[in-house]
Image 1 (cartoon, helix red, strand yellow):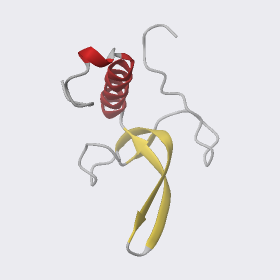
Image 2: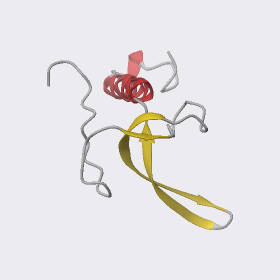
Image 3: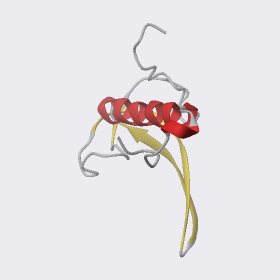
Image 4: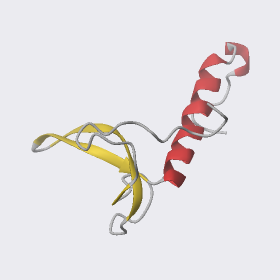
Length: 90
């Protein structure tokens, strides 16, 4: 990879890796249609059982999610004597 985030996960339902026009599931207004990429399946339990759906996100939210995952990964690798702050908090 050349330092860019790879947005080419293959959507199993569409068999492609190109952005589609849809809703971002992460941080954007859910009513706004915009270019989004498949980020994986989502399953969540609720009062009426488990709901499962393909999740999509805009490139901006994917970059933010990636940065959060990298920060969490760095915190997990930190020696215990330096890990005084709760995970996920700068």
